Image 1 (cartoon, rainbow, N blue to C red):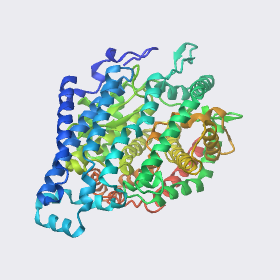
Image 2 (image 1 turned 90 degrees about the horizontal axis):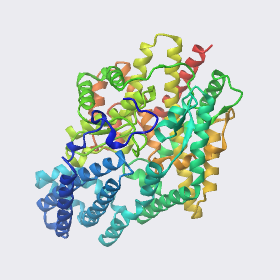
Image 3 (image 1 turned 135 degrees about the horizontal axis):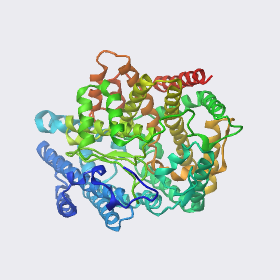
Image 4 (image 1 turned 90 degrees about the vertical axis):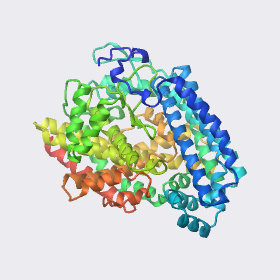
Amino acid sequence: MAQGRELPKREEMNPEFCWRLEDLFADDGQWEESCRKLEQETAAFREWKGRLAGGPEELYRVLEKYMELQQLLERVYVYANQKYHQDAGSQTWQEMAGRAELLSVQLTDAASFLEPEILKLDGETLEKWLAEYEPLKLYERYLREELRMKPHILSEELEGVLAKAGEMGGSPQQIFMAFNNADIDFGTIRDENGEETALTHGRYTSFLESGDRRVRRDAFRKLYQVYESHRNMLSATFTANLKQAKFFASMRNYSSAQAAALDGGNIPLSVYSRLIEAVHEKLPEMYRYVRLRKKLLSLDELHMYDVYAPLAKGPEREIPFEEAKAMVKEGLSVLGEDYTELLEKGFRGGWIDVYENRGKRSGAYSWGAYGTHPYVLLNYSGNLNSVFTLAHEMGHALHSYYSDEAQPYVYAGYRIFVAEVASTCNESLLIHYLLQKAESREEEAYLINYFLDQFRGTLYRQTMFAEFEQMAHERLAREGALSAQTLCDMYYALNQTYFGPDMVSDREIAMEWARIPHFYTPFYVYQYATGFSAAIAISRKILAGEPGIVEKYKEFLRGGSSQDPIDLLRICGVDMESRKPVEDALEMFGEYVTRLEKISR
């Protein structure tokens, strides 16, 4: 689909390349009816207060009703927000997303009695009820997890207060998203042909991959100049997000926001610290890659805007979306016919919103609601990176599909810790397939560099993000406030540490923290790095033909949250409590750097 110089409006997009949100609701009117139903039933749900101690059947009935309301809310929330994400400039969809957020807060408030009442039950009573009332066993893991979290559940009154505070707690993220997706304007730059072209989130990466260094430099400087002009607002918004995370963690009796974030998945804090330690030990491999990049680009100085410049010629033509789908399907065929059939179902079934349009959310994601198929948002631009993004997001989507099919609603949603495993495993399998098909040393070099960039961008870069995030939260806890300059200085110093002496850390890069949406979900990004490491371990087992590994992997995909994330990965023989998966992945990075050095001689 040709995209032209000016981004089209949403209503100008070809429906063939748009996701089919009518699979969630036939139209906005049906969504409105569901909102009214949710409001009414949320209000009625308060009547269950004080009844959980009435016996196992009563407990089962209230949990069933709560899950029913959660499932309806999920559908309402996803529909409204995906409407908003397809055009953040629409006042109607902004209001719908806001209403969905309010409904979420209302349900949380109405159900605030639930956890305190469950926790009033003593262990002996709960064991007796589980034994004597068979239907309640569906919720056994859920109830045991509630008991594990008992030290962090407050009184009914305070739970109600925190539920009401939830809407304010989400404000920093909402402000950032509205600014970053709808209000920000980067203006234009001259492209390779000297024509003035709009600089957008979607085009920024393409400009940084340009063979014309002037284009790369101009895009880099222009984008960060715009963020710099809003640095005080952005630092205030980010600091407000740090403060809300600290507040909620403190209220729930956690030692830190980090401890609160990791406890949800029962992830030991040592996993976070071991990741950073392991990556720091392997920084010399990154420095070796930086030196090789500088040499292959024949540059006296390597700047941050040279990080994405191709080291070898890749496909000079644009890769049509139909071809991208075929590449992904062939590359993942090692996972079996059932997997590729599901891929095709997603490709043809209105799961994917393909191209960028005016006001559309940047980046890519997979999301959805239980009871309907997953959805994938893309901003497909026809390069190899877009092909890998498709493979990545379809990994998420099929993980959700397998989990939803196998698990009841209460256990269908998998934890963030394992969320990046399926997506990155897909990328690893695809790069292996493409390397096998490489017909020249130049093509091999291009693909190896692409894979090295995935390591750099995921394992190294996301760990740097994780370290910055940890430093920011810790500094706020100590000092109570953070200025824009402090944030910039912290980030700039980390950038120098991670890229080493052969990289010129341009001053503009100090503002990069201000454009990372995931920082508004505290302590999320480290899981890209741990997930990448686990995925590399699993993909190597699959490619080595380890007996039974494909079925074990699908068992993992079906697991949802029926087990702790670390236990789910053990199904595939991967132990994330050890440093081995991270160390092995970093060793592979070094091996590919050596391979690229040899090819490039």
